[in-house]
Image (cartoon, rainbow, N blue to C red; front, top):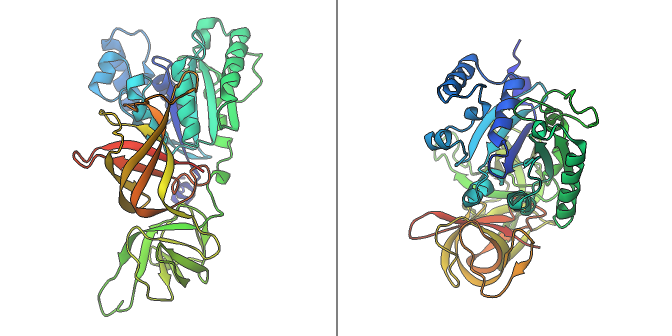
Length: 423
């Protein structure tokens, strides 16, 4: 019997897939969904019919995620596709991201909230530039766990020697990245080897299957539960007789734990108060923790509006207008030196000017290009900005939400940059 309460309380894990073109990302996700019995019979019949029309003599599971017509026609992934499934142990949100260099910005979008990144490597080709590019982005975005899936092992006769060579090459490269938890798995997404069930064709591999890793990797400690950060999204004032004096501050905790009675400070004003109550769905809570969305009531009437932040008295973020950041450039036009952009940080809006472009990263070598660096679409570099209003932030390595921002072209209202605030 389906237990809705049990389902709602299951731990949610977000993961992304990345890799070079034709490494089998969409096929792997299709295999995960199929072998874990997370697709309906009519979906299976639909992709079976499509596979037959295309002249393929097998059920092309990649069609489960490649939903755009151009994706199906070209056999590639262009946009980020999100899929949802669950097992008895966890709920999952998958972001299937493109492999082409020109869609690196899409990969940034899909990976920005992930707990784990699956980096696919073609067993025939080994570690290539896109492998390094996506691994670097995963490192910059602070994804805590990486699963390096060496795919298409069936095309190299399930060779342990080839697997070991790729593992060594990747470890040599990853030694320069800030990633602590890396897992390696030899798989065949097409045939299902080591995806949901163990493969009898690779007896030399003594590790776990991919699904087992996804179900058991520890993610509870990935959220910062030390630094209490509550960006205010909305001020609730009912203006009726029943709630005449009600003033609640709604938002989502970006970090830490808050309880009634806690002494707090409102930033940037610096006014202090104590928490009167914390509410969720009309019920009062004994505590709230990230990433819960709640309403906070204070004992004092303080002028608080959207964009302000409630924190503990003795644990405050940095408050600055001059910011050092790494930028993943998403715009079609290059980053403009001294250019002015709209900036969004948590719930706060400001404007920002580009003070300096420090360098651009060479993805292949990780070398810094400092001589006249131009940051164009899909490039990554370090910049200095100055904002019109102070930002209340933590370094991205400490808090992914308060340590990130986006830049928006004010003329077109298009998001052109994803920023990561440095220590």
